[in-house]
Image 1 (cartoon, rainbow, N blue to C red):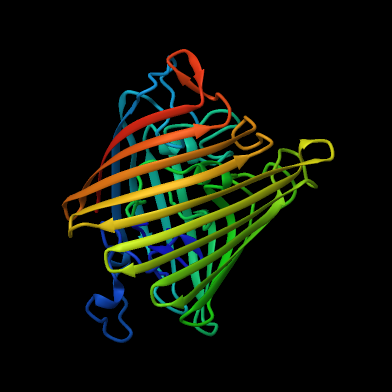
Image 2: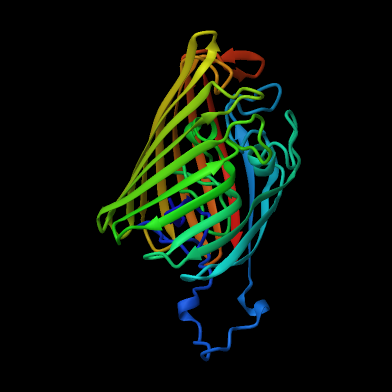
Length: 385
């Protein structure tokens, strides 16, 4: 997973601690490396603002040649046999550096893939349709002078759940396509308030109160709560335990959705990274009156750097949507993905993605006929600054 993971939220802020693992393709400015400012003379505000960007384009081909040209149950690579601008991202921010500091971050994104899926209802999406533009993140931050520094974020931010992330200038995933767990087991973003704190060099945590899953405007009168514990038991091992609870259906204040998410990342060597992501979710009365819906999944990841510029990543996963409430079809999904990567230049990366999906139901299309398998290949070019 080639990206920093913030203690209080994945890719929410570059100011928080990063996981063990390869760094982002474009390192953001580090305030500690800048020339010191004379006492009593703060830098002008315009010199404290950082401007960063990210662009990702892809071509996807489905060997099933589905008649409707749709890759079933894919998150962002859902279009077959077409070149796409997945996302163009512009980030404007003033990062917080220490106790008493305040800042902000705004992520503006546009494109034919990511904004259509990850945009939150009530902002650039109504209940049925999303735009090709999104305000992916927009929050203000403050670090209270409490202990090691108690950080608060207020606004819209990406979720801290899961192994994989919505890619951006902060970094990118090892595989070009996204897992079923990323697309169906966890949320993308939250709008609300979050507090994060590092108890020690090895233990930190976060707590948030938000509208819910992917809601810029709440769809009921109840709020959802989420939490994270991040533990570093050894220098090469990181463990993240995440959870969330609260009603999520429109106009329903009583039937709660519960989600537990466990991420472990082990870096046994400088060019090798192994990871596991486990998810469990349930929702009261979602499968029918008196019948709770349940979904579970597990994904394993491996990345090996062959040279300084060439690497290969492999992902395998199983997602069980036994009641069909997450995918719209009661099924067990499996997939294996192979991703070779070549870093052409410090900010420019080319990737391939060969992926095979299986289901225990005929949910895919082979031309016009139902099938239980689909195989795709994807080419991806991305640039970050």
